[in-house]
Image (cartoon, helix red, strand yellow):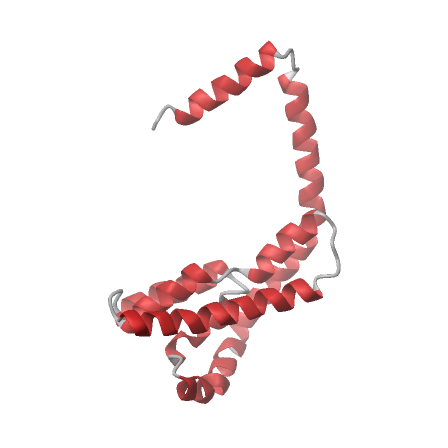
Amino acid sequence: MDYVMPSLIAFVLCYALFKKVNVFDVFVKGAKSGIKTIYNIAPTLIGLIVAVSMLKASGALTMISDFLSPVCEKIGFPSELLPMTLLRPVSGGGSTALLNQALKDFGPDSFLGRCASVIAGSTETTFYAITMYFGAVNIKKIRHTLIAALVADFTAAIFAVLTVNLLF
């Protein structure tokens, strides 16, 4: 396993030499293209990071969770998982921190620990993915994609709890 990457690099270099490709010039071209992509994505990504930080620091996530808790209790969705479920489409790191906290508080083999794990594995960091992929190719109209992705995240969270409930 330790030789896979060096072997791959050696193969690419040998193939480039065989095809008489100027490897350094191709590398520089690719690096320039990467810098342009970063330049296009950076403002949107910075805005997303600021928004996530403000959401966490302002206490808005707690307020939204407290507001939605009674509804979640009625439909059988554990309200303890609501903050993680709400943060997951916005921030992968923040939701992972909440997942770790849930695993510490309830245990990995508990119903809540299993639900949190399945939710983390079956949902996406929607806003980050849209920011990166759509920003890289300068797509501005994301309305339908965003709605479909958030509905998919919501559905995944509900079915995660249902599935764990069936298997637990």
